[in-house]
Image (spheres, rainbow, N blue to C red):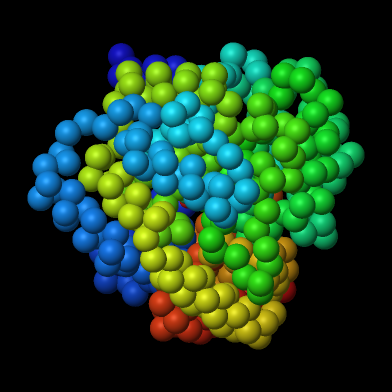
Length: 402
Ligand SMILES: Cc1ncc(COP(=O)(O)O)c(C=O)c1O
C-alpha cells in the first residue's frame, strides 16, 4: 500500500533544504559547519513592521482576510508597483496576495497548466519552478544560460525552446542562483520572442528586486514589455526585501482573469495568508525604507568580502553577482581531482559533498538549478561566518590532488 498519489514521485524535497538538513545533522554530531546553503536574510524584520503586527494583534485583526488579500495591502502593493516600477495595477482585481511568492507561483501554474503544456525555464533556475511544473503534469523546456553570456538567454536558444505548446516562460531577475540582473534590452528580447507565441505567458519573479549592487538599476519585465501586459504576471514579495521570510507574504500582479483564477484557488485552499502578516506587510511597503537600502549595502560588502577571499582559492572560480545574495561559483577545476579519501570528484554534487564533509561548509550543487558544474554559496550570513567559511574552503580545496 502507498500513502501517496503517483504525482508525488515527480518531485523531491528542495535540494537546498536537503543540504541544510545534512549540515544540521553534522552539527548535531558536534561538527562545526558554516551553513551557506539557505537563501534567507539573517537580518531582523524592521522594528516598524514588527510594531505594526503587535498593534494588529491588540486591535483584534485576527480574523480571515479576503482571499485576494487585505484591501489595504493590495492598495500598498499597487502603490509600490506604480512608485518603484511605473506599473499601474488595479488593487480591486489585478493583484492577489499569497502565502509567500511560492504560493503565487504555484497557484499561477495550477490555474493555467493543462497536462503536457510546456514551461520554459532559464537555467540556472530557482529549484521550485521545475518541481511545480512536474507536479501539475507540465513539461519543462530548459534554456541553458551560460556563464559566458552573463547567465542570460541567447535569442536563438529561446526561439528554439518556444513552441505552440508553450504556456509559460519564467524570468527571474535578479536571479537565484546566478545573481544576474536582466537589463531592459535583455527583457525586451525575451518579450519579443514571447510575443510571437500568442498562448505563451510570462512570469517575472522579481523577489530580489531590492538586493541589487553597484548602482545597477532594476527593470521590471512589465516596464520593459508593456505590450505584453495582458500576458504577464509580476511575482514579488516581502521575504527578501524586508527580511520577512517567516511572515509568508508574496503577491502577484497581472491580468484580471488570471488573478481571479489564482484568488479562487486561494479561497479553496489557504483562504488567505495571515491577516497579521498582511498588516505588517502594508507597513513594510508604506513605511520607512531605510533598512532595505542599508541591508543592500551590507550584502554588497559581503559579496565583495567573499569575492576577494575566493580569488585566493584556485579551484573555485567565482563570478561577481549584480544582485540577490548568492555566489554561483564555477567548480569545474575541482572535477577529476582526488580527495584524501581516494574519491575522485566526478561532478558538482560530489564537489558540494566534499566541501561539506572536508571543508565543513554547506553549499548547494549547480545540478539542483539545472546548470553544472557550479556550487551556490549564500552570503546572507555574518562576515565572521563568511571569513571562517573562506578559511575552511581554502584548506579543503588545497587537499585535492590532480
Ligand atoms: C527566485 C525565488 N522566488 C521565490 C522565492 C520564494 O519566496 P517566498 O518566501 O516569498 O515564498 C525564492 C526563495 O528562495 C526565490 O529564490
